[in-house]
Image 1 (cartoon, rainbow, N blue to C red):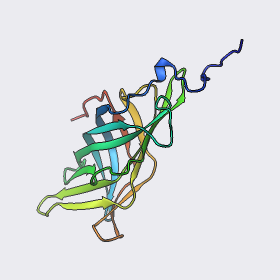
Image 2 (cartoon, one colour):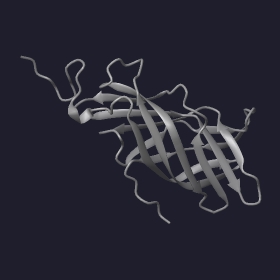
Image 3 (cartoon, rainbow, N blue to C red):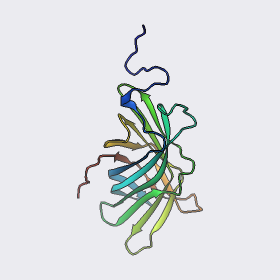
Image 4 (tube, rainbow, N blue to C red):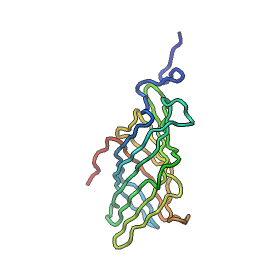
Length: 194
């Protein structure tokens, strides 16, 4: 008779507490972030952002057991807000279709449950400034957000941006803006302060 330590599991099994959603399920979550620093040209603005994210669970070719890991296809991403000084409005959306999804959900420990989510998101950003036409920029490389969860979908969990994200005009590699950081709550979010 063998003993199993906390966090160990028999090969191919996962405790109920660490169950992943079934392949084909679509999950939609609210998002909110406060004091998000965005550098535009030589100035830095802060934003409170709100939005929504929608993902579809898919089989992961790198993980044959869907109880241990799945792929997440982002089918919708939208965050928007106005700068603290009121002069600039920003909108972040998914840049095109997530044709080759790189986002993953992995069980790291069955009991107590620990699930790691990594979201890889190519983004388009639109800047609206009074008396100027809107400016749409594209991320030079994807934003990578990570979170350690007890369950999925998230229940007000924190997601952290792992890399500053540079935004460029189409056909250029000259940086116009940089998302310097992002600490995002997903799931049961509270209203942002007015």
